[in-house]
Every structure is written in C-alpha cells, then in structure tokens.
Length: 303
Image 1 (cartoon, one colour):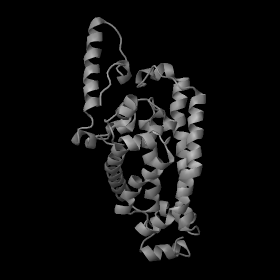
Image 2 (cartoon, one colour):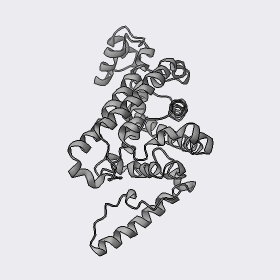
Image 3 (cartoon, one colour):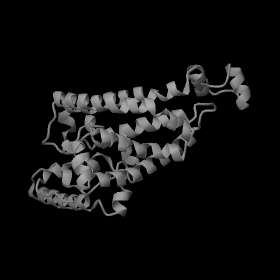
Image 4 (spheres, helix red, strand yellow):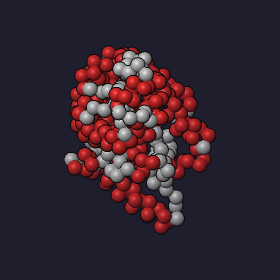
C-alpha cells in the first residue's frame, strides 16, 4: 500500500510530477496491500502456464505442414488430448504446491526488500536486474540440475520431469512436487541479491517461465527473439537433454550455455551435432533429404 493520500502528495514526496506509468501504478496500487500485490504472481503464473503453451499446440495442430521443418523430433506427435492431460497434471501441482507456496512466502519478499513504492524503476534498472536474475538462476540451476541427475536425485525426484523424452510446452513445469520446491531456490536468489520493484519481480517470474516453455516446446523456430541472445541455449539445446533421457549428463543449464561449456557437460551434444552435420552433408551429396534433427540418428546417443 502506497503511503500517499493523493497523486499530489506522491509528487511532493518524490519531488517531480508522476509519469504516465507511475500514475497508472498509483491509481491501481494505492489502496492495495503489498501482500495482495505479491499474490498477483499466482494469476500471472496461471496465465503463463495456460496460454503460452497453447501457441505451440495451435501451430502444431493447424500449421504443421509449414513448421514441420522446425520440429526437433519430427517423428513424435502429441494429440490435443495428450497436451490437455499434461496441462491437468501441471495444474494439480500448481493448485497443491505452487499456489500455496506463493501464499505463504510473502515474509521472505518483505525480508529481502522487494518494494511497491514510487518512483517506478527505469527501463535500464529493470533490464539490468533481470539480467542478474537470469545469470544467478542459470548458474544455481545448473548445479541443482546436475545433482538431480545423480542416482538418488534422478530415481526419487527428477525422473518425473523426464517422462517426456520429447518435450512439449505444457511439460515445462511438469515435475515432482519436491523438484518444484527445490528449483524455486534459484529463482529467488537473484531478487534476494539485487532486490527491486514488485513490477520487476512480476516480470522476472513470468519471463523465466515463458523461457522454460519455449525451451520445452519441441520447436526450434528461426524467428524467435531469443536467437539474438548470446550464449542462449534454446529449444534444440534442451531438447537433446530430454532425448538422451535419464542417462543424460549433458546440457544441464536452464538458460545459457556457458556453464555446460566451462564444465564440459555439453560434449555429447556437440559431438552429436558434428556427426549429424556429417550425415546431413553425406545425404545431400547422395541427393537424399534429411531433417537435421538430433532424433534423426536414433543410434547416436552420447553423454
């Protein structure tokens, strides 16, 4: 709840007129508690989990003829019912785990200093904080993910997520309830280290989940904006991790590729890409088509 009785009071307190965005924020949030504003995350996550994967379902059902070239594992098809079943499984975890966690975790947000006050952060502040959040989450998630691929972590927790050897958008948050809780830690560390505004926090949670859905989409679309992000892994990179399955000791990173490169856990992926390039070039010379996906060479699986 903002400590200002009116817009004029707010302008006096910050020493300048409110921007248009700040006026909208004042009108919306002035009489709402910080806890209520924080709980918007539940609505945003529900909308992201529900709507963003539908884009990939839509293009696969109605435009498969035009985008089949970009499907990473083209021989595997999921019906609308398959996607719906996955969505219901995710929603069960959302209702029983994610939602309640959001409701009870507000004291931690207070502790680290996420603010709702004016002035609103600048675009540069939001961008730089989001960059830090992604870096911190990616590094921390990398090591937790490696742990979950150990014998105990995989057999007891992580194998649920790997039930989808061919990922789909709805399967991005499909996981054991314990994994959902554990992987909440990397998402929280960035804002804890560099606390910002509630709007930045909302953006962070939404963007991270949208990114996860893209990397699980099963499509390596050439026009996605993430193609322009340096060291970004993307759908093809993470799809390989699922394709190899439980034996995978490759491509652990959630967003970027530098951790896998530094610690040598992308060698299987790079080796397979090299072999597939050679196969593709050979088939081209023979005049035979090849889709170029890592699933095209069923016998080539490497850690």
